[in-house]
Image (cartoon, rainbow, N blue to C red; front, side, top):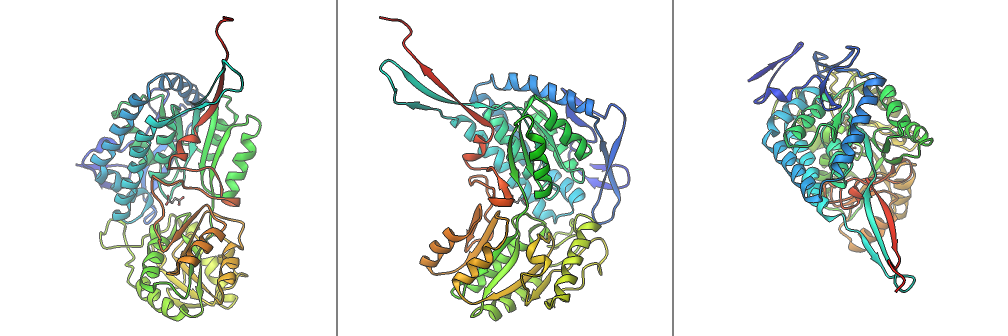
Length: 495
Ligand code: SIN
């Protein structure tokens, strides 16, 4: 069946997944003042849908319902919460194709990558459905005779999430599933550019039997929602994925109410290729990590450091592989690179590109950004890059691979660590001693060693330094939504 909306047709097997209302305070609702936000296709600019621009009072209502939802949800036993999460996971799998199509329509990523993201997103729900049953506490040897000391992890309370446009499903499930597994309720504010995936996920959660007051999705203007979330005494935890600049502001806003925070912020990932690397593997890893989501990923390599002895060989192989990446429409199954999210994203790539050329970089592959229609940018390979260039200092968030040559291992590691950020880092070497040494020396929350695909539900995802704090996924992911209670039991009677 096809879904006809404002200006665009998208084929869906289950058109009910296409939602233009928010799920909060127990039901699907528009904004009380009727205001909306247009959701557009990043390639054509065509309006896909209108979603509510909720007012402060709508948001207050959502949070107060979430508070009631928390009191109900925390009272369920863990296996009951786990069963509902498991059902949500199964429904995502059953609706994978529709969810992928909604994602490609609003975000633009290649349809195969959207399917991959639905699997990735669902894997967090499966993981946390299992973790829900493992919220173990601890018995502590007593300090005095007759005492019993116990530590009990408890759900922290109403939690809120502010999620980005680059992974419209996975960045929600890895927060929401962890929160729900811990016994918290959650209110999610998806990016205004990609709310349709979030609303479809909320619909499936509702179908899975997760109460509407336990998981809500609210759309609206970022400043209004951020203010409502951080000023509410009902909110105990905020999880944010996005820029370091916004993360800092949210942290300041959370200070008066001392809300617990997880911040997954910007990166500036190094990708080091040592002389003893396997070039075929290194190129495969570079393509997978750099060109995923057309370079719009926080863990994308942003700086390639290649040792002198392997430089020319690696560059030739990478150039060949990059030239084979087909650019086009996300719904074309053969396409690997699609439109950037908007014209501002293209402008940033353009600024980085011209700054690098002006400072002496050589472009050996790719056209000047801005020369293709539909916000597309062909993969760009730059050589002779220096640390004085903007693209070395800031995340480009586009399909640009800048390469710097280095001589010794110590120099490579020093250059890699010369950034205030520390989300992901990658390196390739077949020397086992070097692998241990460099793995430990890199200042980063995550390190891929001979591996370009590091993200999965089992491992703790997160950064250090200006890339933020807190971990998502892994057994640590649920702890972000728990607080510890220490219980000291004395004797009940004097005998
Ligand atoms: C991100 O870009 O923030 C997330 C990427 C991932 O989960 O691998």
